[in-house]
Length: 173
Image 1 (spheres, rainbow, N blue to C red):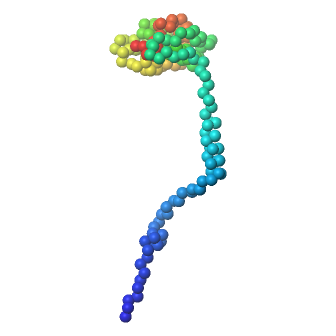
Image 2 (tube, rainbow, N blue to C red):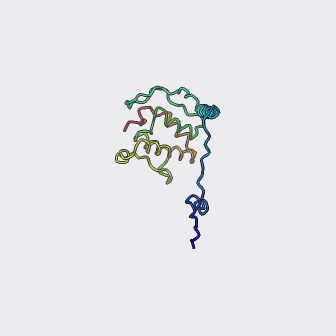
């Protein structure tokens, strides 16, 4: 007697019968006029999101020169605000006052009497160790301190009276 033949399931039949996951199929559409129109519409929307650059009101930048830009000082509004003083402190690419004027400002603000106002980095070893951005952030901390302690008026008067050569500018040391 002949053995009954069992048909062996094909590998595809076994996978579809026993495999728990299905492979995702991409939703692709063939090309044509309508797809190109969709693409062009998406590209126009992307281009519309970025308007042409507006010209700046700032003066020309001198590359390779450490000299500050010439121009009038930024007047601080009355009564002064911390934001206005920060803008005035950054005018002409300023970083902070030089060590001598900054030490005089610290004394004028009465900083030695307050524990929450750190002294300025006027010692030569501190001055050389800090980058221009770190010095700018330290001066920003002094402006914020003056705002918290209602000392913005004396700070504004000091900044308005400080000549441009007593400011440290980006690129200088």
